[in-house]
Image 1: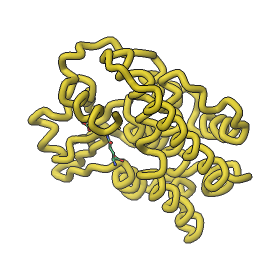
Image 2: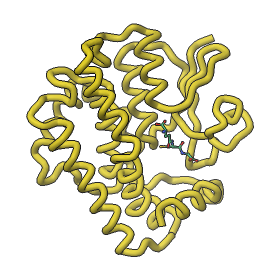
Image 3: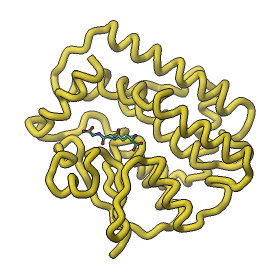
Length: 238
Ligand SMILES: N[C@@H](CCC(=O)N[C@@H](CS)C(=O)NCC(=O)O)C(=O)O
């Protein structure tokens, strides 16, 4: 049985897993879980992960949730090139530092702007108070500043001269608000140059393919299927 990846490319952690698997020619079956259609709440997906979030992996009888755990599993199982997750103690620690920070450091900020600026008002007709949006943009701005000043600094990539898992995870996150029409690269030459290097290292075709779903504007869909997710998002972000 082929290794299965349960993904929705609207999701940042799914895109990093997807780009990593594709870039490394890791054979897998793409199992689409449409979050906006509520497929994460279905019976079948509950057997893969009780967390009911994507990405998730199934390799035979072994199921795994959490993007970072999945990326590390794939890197180790398929013995991908060292630069993705170097054996060198300090380079690896630098990557671990970013992977640990991003969960709370940027994860929700990019998502929040995406929901407050695009999906809630334009797809679901929910009025978003300006102060909530302003606060979300401010939080995102602080996170992007840290990515530039603390994580990239004057290096080509987060861990040094080569792309690594940290850059893959970071770029998927940084691109999320771009999907809501916010040009996060404007006025940030360092971030912009880093994005160009990451895109070149991944390959423009794969980069564009991974991001096309979030760059396509307001998705066309049956919003009646979004009630559970909508309540969850409103509780979380408003
Ligand atoms: N810490 C998890 C986060 C996963 C996550 O937040 N997934 C979101 C999409 S980006 C999801 O599946 N949300 C569906 C829901 O909560 O109903 C990881 O890195 O994999």
